[in-house]
Image 1 (spheres, rainbow, N blue to C red):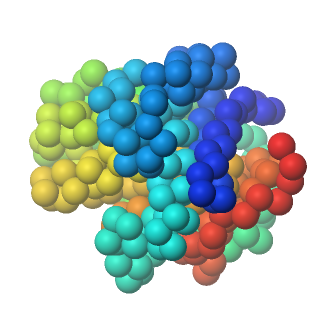
Image 2: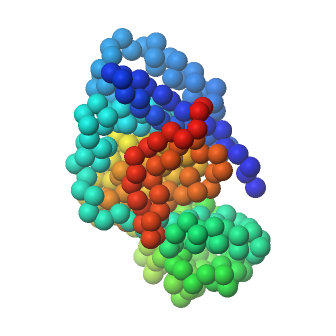
Image 3: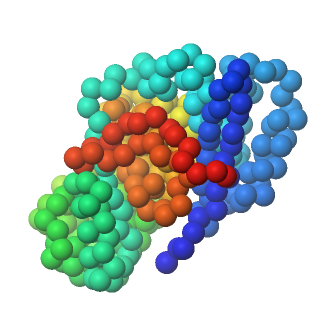
Length: 313
Ligand code: MG
């Protein structure tokens, strides 16, 4: 079990306003606090202008250090919104018609641990769960969950299944259990196998590890029904927004996800959620020392609140 996640916060000050960004760095990402700090120092050295739009322009072509880029990108959006006295959603002309349901993630856990998590999620107001499966005891995990809750659930296999035939029968079984969707059942390079499964499978299939950036979406069209967009994968709000437009153009579903961001990263992502089918922004509910408050879950749905710092850093 992971007990903590390293993070780098970015603070930009301009015309009396403060914009915050965040790079969260779970151990499966290649970036570290050191690499993020180095990227930020180099970026700072390379820029001579002081306008927000010039900073955006300079950041646009960056193709590496995606968590660092995401931290800077969201801090710039945060700052631009304050300078222009608008929300990030208003800057992107996103109508806040209806916010999607938010999922609460349950990692691979014992029945007792699962019970505690289900209770925490219920208390926080979540109406959907995302259950992690790893190919071992999957049936038992789902039966355990159903003994604790009759709420809706999705599953995230994290590339944990292999045999396409077996995957089909597991998905048929999950459909009977009223599962909503299946995320990343096969390893990320198994695109043609995924296309075979998609043809036979009764549940929507979402790409996570297979879909990192805007340039990945087109080739996933025949293999998945939807994509999981995360700011840490794609480098921030700017590209995430373009990814949503691309997915919609290809008639694909959209889930806005997170890694283990605090309220800084999850609130930034929450501005995009009126355009999504689901939001997996449970980061602030899974960490105990969030130095900010912002987006929340209300009656199961994402609720947007302005980002407020609640603890000195
Ligand atoms: Mg996933």
